[in-house]
Image 1 (spheres, one colour):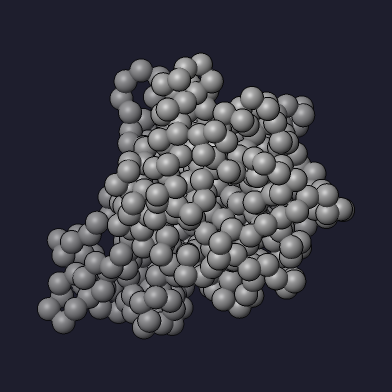
Image 2 (cartoon, rainbow, N blue to C red; image 1 turned 180 degrees about the horizontal axis):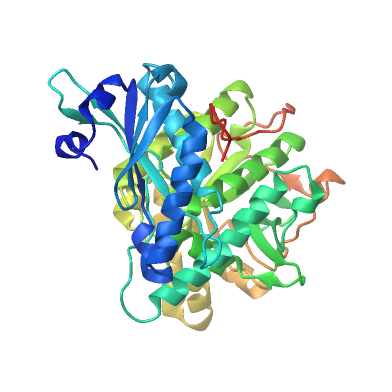
Length: 444
């Protein structure tokens, strides 16, 4: 991302004075320029310079060395975590995350940028040592044909309204509420032979506008993934689910995360630190990795799975067979749960060949994971067909439609059972707070 040639463009004396310096990049600057024009791109670059200037104050300096590429010099390393690389990386990750959640006004409308960063350490021979990337970008590349620019603008509008809703939900000021609200609906996974027995309940995103119009959660999630902002949405939803686990100590809940979020970063460091301090929550949380975007690095995702499972969480692969995950990736992740996509059940309804395929899919998933769930159960016939294919656990409208109500808070009408390895607890803990905690100046 940077080289000794890049560093040579800076004043040598100022580099020598810097206790730490980093390279920051607006990863979607070309996207913005292509979709909104060069003027809008210039406005967000100026906006970022001003915002970062407020953060670092007189403790450092910021230089734009190429359009959207900045060199951040901090004179005192203690301001950004000291000598410890892990603490400095956490500071940089929080900074980049706060920037990406910030609205930058422009003549084209409100925009969000994705900022990534790397610490560059100067060695004795003045060669640049490049650290890992903080807040890496996994959004789609700039498109040049068809309606790419129009779709990008539509995605930016949708994502911006949702990020505004997330910010408003974290504010204690009622007037901060915006035209879009995000809610969670819940749907149980039930035993085929005893629907009153619930394995766990899955949290499903719901988007509502000011006119009480329900937006498509699928469209919303895809917009976040295309822009590369899925980790911001996922962190918000995961936090909400953790809050409910803390409030209701006898339930097990599942939550979807994008494949973009299934990699180790500062968010998961914070979440796991919370789990370590408050045992009994992680063991009741299931993370369902969706297949709507490909896994960029299977080894990195496998490392994430290993670390998060060590804290007590369970991992599910959602919509298996309809997305990007291959058998090789499934074997590498070794999930605790595999959820068979509803399309295989629909095919089984209309042909014996489809039923045979569903049976093979259930058997394959069962050879890898301890629990297999078939999705899309709409009636009793679907239930019997999926059970004949070997599916003991099922999900769909036949059992319950997703609802924003939380019946477990009022009455225990259903029996919950534990997935192997889950241990229920009566612990109730404080609300998980994920503030950016920027160290100086005006917070973004």
